[in-house]
Image 1 (cartoon, one colour):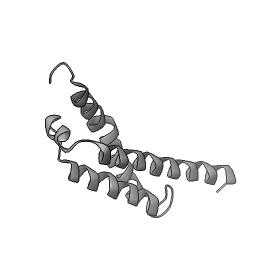
Image 2 (image 1 turned 135 degrees about the vertical axis):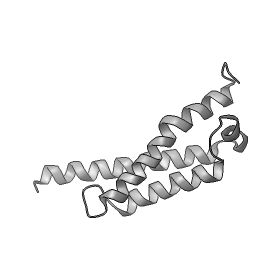
Image 3 (image 1 turned 90 degrees about the horizontal axis):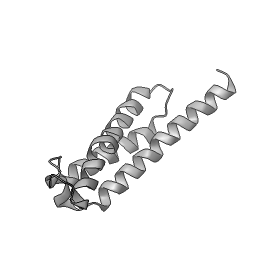
Amino acid sequence: MPLIAQWIMLVISWAGTLVGLVAFFHALLQRSDAFQAADRKTKPIWLAITGAGTVAMGLFGFGGAGTIFWLAGIVAVLVYMVDVRPKLIEVQRGGKNW
């Protein structure tokens, strides 16, 4: 594999892990009742999901034998970032429907 391809895969791998850390710490800093008000799973569940996803991405890099675990981790983290996080922000800011 060319060196540039290896560097790109390394950057993708670490970028995913960084997004996982951001998601985990965002979930950690949110109020527990905001998760229920947003009609999402509880805070401990999302901490476990984002934490496990981040660990999976850290242990199994993108492009290796454990790519399937890396992909599962990035999907879990991205669900939080794209679906849960905006709802939590909306609930805590007092959105229109709350």
